Image 1 (tube, rainbow, N blue to C red):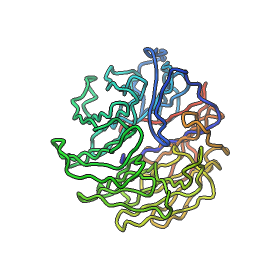
Image 2 (image 1 turned 120 degrees about the vertical axis):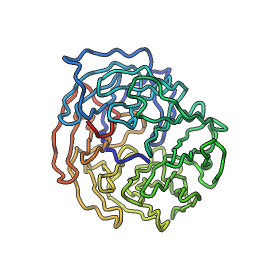
Image 3 (image 1 turned 45 degrees about the horizontal axis):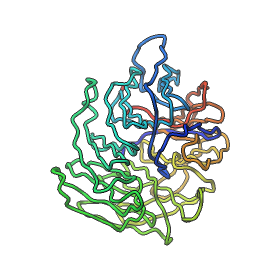
Image 4 (image 1 turned 180 degrees about the vertical axis):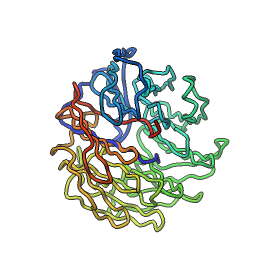
Length: 399
């Protein structure tokens, strides 16, 4: 549901976690944690970083120049912390154990703005609004990222779910708010609220609802354990998976393509299923296509290109550039070496972050980070960092 972004992260080194840390496994994209006040190592200058990237590591954050990949600053921040674009040219949102914290990546400093709450989960950007979902409280906060510029906490629209759960929410351009339904034990679907937070639509035929994305013409999708639930033109539509259990828990959308990219898992008993098939859902026809890539991937492997390309980073180290209309792999970019997805979702693994025409791919096993031009497939630059990185994200393009 966000505009195309690009990122990759490779696996290899385990992330040390403090025993006191309690985080919600997203099966795909969730939670975060940290402790204590962050320490910031001084950089040689206080210059504004161009199109900054932020990569987490065990114990802190690296801020890098998005063009050169030159490290600008190291921020000490204990614990497992998640990184998400805030929706503007300067900021990212860091999910910590105390809540969502706003970080000015361009100037390499925390702003002091925080949305407190246990188990901060998904951060969603769409139609010029940023939406935070706090799993531990069920609270939703919606704000305009343009208001982050003066350092003050932006005015937020708030909504609290009937029950706390591992959820997600998105605000549409007309002010409607779509939010998931569920409890800590069971998630069932989604509802839609009007501008005044009055419920106007509900669908409870999406077991295990997880993840979200928006595609062309503002069609919103959330994943289910048996397909995908779409919200289109004010109505919910369920697209069933071809299998009784066909979980599409992680999705990537594009504003220029009507086709949704999703993962696809079929074994409810697996400790960790390593699928080789992806799903492509045409929101115009409500048709679902499965494509076998011949290699597995992880929840951090999905992205979209500037022209709507479907991007998947395989465990064979190849970044697959796929035509979403046909399912054909049009380009294979040799990005990193072979890797294996770790059992613990919090451990480092290859991660893809896409911004404009550049795909960033991390390679934790070698402490490397690479940038690729998606149009030519050429490697633009690489950097070796002091520690292996885990999450990878950045600001939206602009500077």
